[in-house]
Length: 393
Image 1 (cartoon, rainbow, N blue to C red):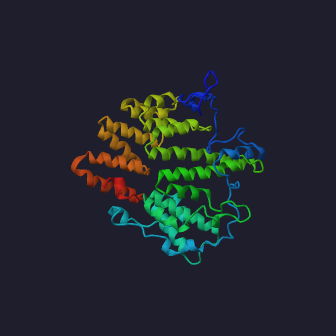
Image 2 (spheres, rainbow, N blue to C red):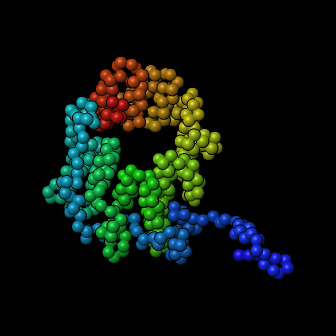
Image 3 (cartoon, helix red, strand yellow):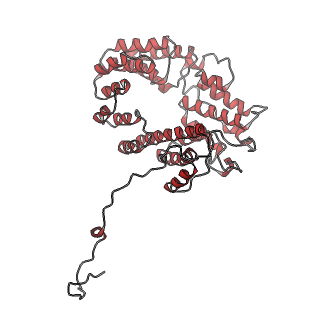
């Protein structure tokens, strides 16, 4: 557009007026994303309708804490033996685990609770393919979840990702209740399915889709207060999962911005991301007297002596293992070994502990393999099972 001259005639060579020159700066208002709740947190149906416009697409009907009618669905396709793969043995397990006696129980839930993860995975597949099959669809989905979780706890994530494909699209209309339009699948199974995708970018998209459901029910005044609290908590957990996915992508700054933008902040999540990103001063400023966070910051800063003193004041498996790690970095190999081996003798074994003890054994020189096999024998005698990478073999 040609601007008029002061005399009223048009000038042929005057420049165009840019949009930026005419722009009026307006203070930016704080907006709520799909991982935030409206104010007040437990508003009625009017609040739910007012916040619906903040989501890119209309949210699905508000689900309930318990899945709707499920028994009307035909889930027999989930019982085919071809859905399940044999678990690796000789290439993944040390000899003590291959010769260990099998647990006496055959109940998948009992085996999972007793930390017999491999046995639980096998028992779950057996229960799903047995005749007669599980009596209800709810039982089928529960056993399926045990199977997938057990595979993950055995470090067989890729196998679990293959097997969950038997469900195909978990968001398909087949899995929706025809009357309510809500998913009939357990919440935990749907979240696990996203995690098994092994693609942090797609996982973030999946978490935000679930977040829309959480917001809908958390803001629905027709739902009981207790039920809305369940979904509010789920929404907060999804926020942490999104931050974790961003960390897996290596975008720690985005994870920090995401956590700082959440209305319902978990005080421990943000400093942990700061520590992972090497932003130790920021992490130190938000420890708020939390001993665990203070010790982790000191470890990140290389203050192994100071961190060891804090861990020594606390009880429990996690502080004990971290104290052993500090001893290791302080060059006190014997003390670190003693701490970790004492836990094994007390019947306490978990992956991080085994891995750290295997690291200590590697510093022992030529006897490392022998010590690792002896450790595997102790672990197998406790009924637990770990794959070779846990022993660094």
